[in-house]
Image 1 (cartoon, rainbow, N blue to C red):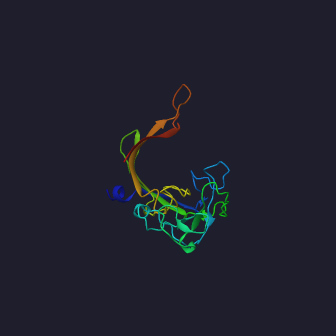
Image 2 (image 1 turned 30 degrees about the horizontal axis):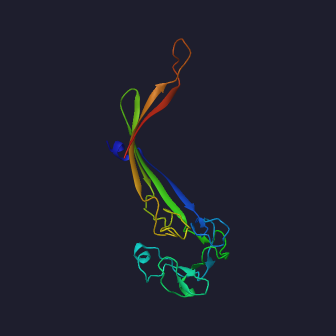
Image 3 (image 1 turned 135 degrees about the vertical axis):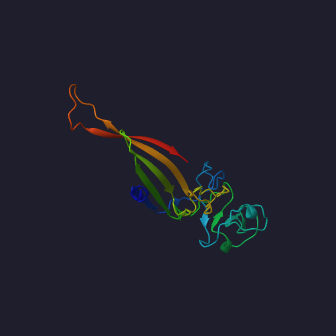
Length: 213
């Protein structure tokens, strides 16, 4: 009985690390340089340390600075999303009027999202059965992202200034998930030639797997 309780346990795991995904900042539906394309124009770089705030509360406030500015061509700066007045220090990115012929100086893949890491683990309990043809029953629990590590900015990658999810680092992906199941492992004699069965006939192990949540 003690062997049945304490024996037959097993564990396994996978740890994954991935560097952050590069992202090109652009504006969709707004042709700045007048080339007829409305999905590939880039802004000017302003203050690299200016925060980006695309929260619902900020986007709906006429006095909030979202971090993206608009230069009307005269040097006057207002927030691109809310119209709030600001200075060059308030904006990380600055756009110019449509068809103004202005070419943004921001390069490709200039923003990098945080890295990605997960820790997956499995716990297995194998119970031997006394039946003639049944070898064992295997109970298994799989845990994906076992430590519930948040992977910021990976739920909605978006470099479009016109999107409400622009550089949304609050969007996370793949929270902790569990999966439970059991497996019945059987012994099955391998096919042999006609005639008497040899004493050392090969035996194959066949698994019938049943998974549940």
